[in-house]
Length: 568
Image (cartoon, rainbow, N blue to C red; front, side):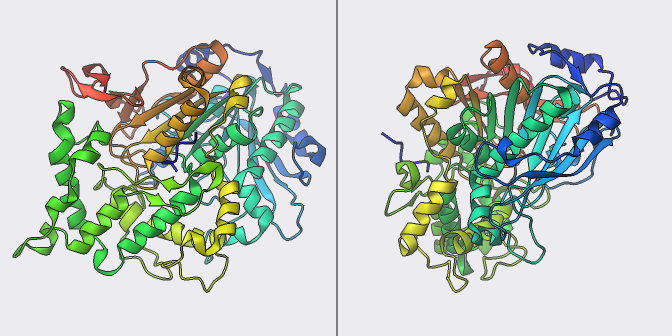
């Protein structure tokens, strides 16, 4: 029965590995190393031949190569600011072959699918496909850290992996909402699932041409929308990847868009909560829950219990209180709306009828660029408006745009009053395309695939309880023992959608490859914080606990993971 409530210090030469990188690679069962040969520039340039449609496993146009260029080594760099913590880091790479291309659409009115494939001079026989973010529309170059990746470890390309990414089959246009592409059905299907499959197959062809052999192991790493893409690959194309890491995935995509829009409507006018009041709620949550794990450190470790313990009505304004020292009735109602589930009047794909409410903790997480806590994801810099303002929240811009262009493709639609039943057939159709909620992962398991999901418990871009509910639905469908043999769910307390607020970085690439290639299930994983300067010293660590465990402080240095144990 379906669970219904979820809805570095690298060598600059590129060819020589440092001792640290050798140690990182030595933990794996290394396939036979291959190279681009004595003349890598010529070998790279030779990859400019088209890839026929017959090399792609689903109906598709052919792939053309725009350029195949040998790129120079790049040293590690750190920016002063960035939209996310990880975006501040430009990882080091050695020389590599960069292939840029596009896959032609079947519909002449649909955009092409752009892609980038990065081939190292020395290949370890593996590849990593990077997922996208938001509504995509921007080419993922696969030259960044992987989701949740440690700052002090090499990115996959520097370890000898082929890496690749795509724009998912449409390109953002300045001045247009990022959801406009959905008016073309092929572009919508490409965004939903087809582009990632097509680019995967093209990348395999290019690897085979470059090195004379297909990859031995293929991995997918994605966060947010990219996390949804990873789960979609496991569900729709279970034979294509050996290991998948899905961080903060927007699993019940349809439920998220409707719940996010509802949450925005609740904060219109007098319901909008000002920054000083966000700070008030944040501090009230900490007062109720912070010390419950044995340590008052600004991190709520047991977010599930805190959701029951915290009562927002205690902040309701009393006569004579200053406006920023309390919440009005309509603001209290807005918070209750955020925390409550969104119920659909009919079943979405895979029998899902509910999107879970959001949790508590991290309300006042400081922003990295446009992201962080309530102020970025839920509330923005001004009350929601129609059309959305530039400083409206991400949830309002995303949710209201999705309602208009995905579920109610009419520019006259007033999203503030639109309900799923107003266009039920279309809602169901988009849900069948977009929602990665199928709990039947038996085919992925049968081919030996491994799946790791990581939910950040202070996430206000999407509800972490959607991922938790999905994991529980898989266990219900396949049984606990069978699920545990190939799937893990971890939760990170106090961490925001993009990895700010608490220790959030973990070497999931090694954990996943060791599980796939050596049969070593993940164990002893740690979340860490870093200084934002090389050599990226660790400043704080916590154990990364499997759901439903959470880290409880025992004794010793509060900045060391050994001072905590995973507890119920």
